[in-house]
Image (cartoon, rainbow, N blue to C red):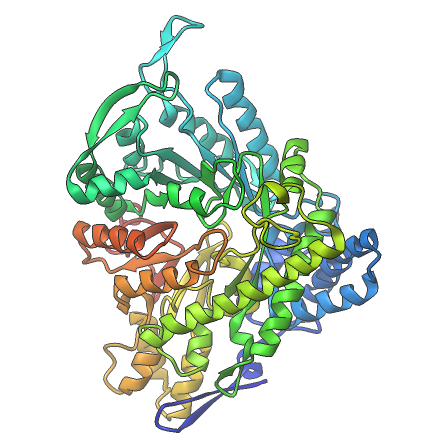
Amino acid sequence: MIKSIRKRDGRTVKFDLKKIAVAMADDLLLSSNAATVLKKRYLRRDEQGKVAETPGEMFERVAAHVSRAESKYGGDAKIFRSRFLKMMQALEFLPNSPTLMNAGLPLGQLSACFVLPVEDSLSGIFDALKNMALIHQSGGGTGFSFSRLRPKNDVVRATGGVASGPVSFMRIFDTATDVIKQGGRRRGANMATLRVDHPDILEFIQAKEKPGFLENFNISVAATDEFMRAARQGGEIELINPRTGQVAGRINALETMSHIAKCAWQGGDPGMIFIDRINAAHPLPSTIESTNPCGEQPLLPYESCNLGSINLAKLVERGEMSWERLAELAMLAVHFLDDVIDVNRFPLKQIEEVTLQSRKIGLGVMGFAEMLILMGISYNSQEAVRLAEETMKFIAERAREQSARLGEERGSFPLFEESKLKNWSAMRNATVTTIAPTGTISIIAGTSSGIEPIFALAFVRRVLAGARLLEVSPLFECAAAARGIFTPELKAELARKGSAADIANVPQDLKDLFVTALEIPPEQHVRIQAAFQKHTDNAVSKTVNLPESATVDDVLKVYNLAYDLGCKGVTVFRYGCRCQVLYLGNGETLPGCKYCG
């Protein structure tokens, strides 16, 4: 397959994607890294633990199982099986990992995202722990708000003792996660949130400062609008004891946000979610308290959601976006994700009941950075921001139209009459769009993850219990070869540096086009995220990558800009501050990393 980009000077650089793929013993062409991930994590195994299907057969299994939902509504399962299979085999759309892993198999749990309530009682806490274990075993990730738990040293009348506080109970969830493998294929993942007005907020903010502590958790502060205003004005906010509803103290908002920024600068946690903004945009009257592990899917207690992503890089033809094909994929993907709900085997009856009330789905994208490259547009440009908004607006409109069409045919989600969507005559799904990180499914698709920029032109990805995958940008290799500059010496230098920015013989226009994550100003990261958020029902998973030299003040600027531009949350990561999934160059050791030395 030939792809090309048209440069502003009129030149065209062609990419032969087949030459950069590795043929497997299968009818598909996949990269060697995709083959590794599929064999270790996704492909069906027999009773002896041996791989028992090819990637093509995996897609056939998924398409056959999901299309069974058509019979429930008088549709033609055979036709949709073929259509679902075609878009997955072409790597134009892939569902979230549990669907690929479990569809058509005895486990049958197909959703990636769950939120569980944690009630302020010993039985409530351990009910949540048990439910988490069942979800992790089935392949899902869990989010929790610990904001309902009484603060440390508060009274426990049943025993006459004092409470140990939310952070102490988070340790129990973390330890349990450590010993449970999701479906035997991947470690569990959790999100812990705590409201910024909880009395234990300062302990929570610094909870992950100790190396190895709460390693199975991402943590996020649920920041209120009141807190963000007070931080700008140098004011205070009240701390509220959730057991009594009474004021338990006050904190300076700016000092608290600076403390959040310092901890994030040191180790990547906590993130920030703007909880009032999330609830203001939520189409249902109930209150959201937490999100899934990567923050892009706010959910009600006991609610789940299944996600899927369109590979934008596959839709560029001769340097232009194929809007017609994008429209077709968006509508078919919504149909697919709605079908997933009906064939899903939920891990808990409560989750099934709550999920079916709203029927939330989350269609997103991957390959955005590669799409820009194929169109000759730098990620670090205003044109990239404009195209981000245009693309997501187009997807969101097609997705909502398809959900409305399904609502007319199959019936609206049960809470439709209570929702903010009553301006439509019918609606199948309360939400339809989410931007997920697409970590492993983007490896399978052979493209850049989510809406992230290219991390580096050569880097090591750490996956699957310590396995290390060396990745070199095939698009850069082809573009450099077309200029006659791709030599063994250049390849070796890329492997050392990860970027072409300081390599003398690489033309400036290629450096601009293949700009990497750490070369992009933090403000541009945020502007791209905000552009996608404008037309996304749920939230956007996006990391604001900071160089090792970034300061705490740089982190604070990111928080304020993200809030000002309408983001629902923000995560920063300063390179080398702790162990990470992606390393520049060979990535043997991260300089300054307290985990790697």
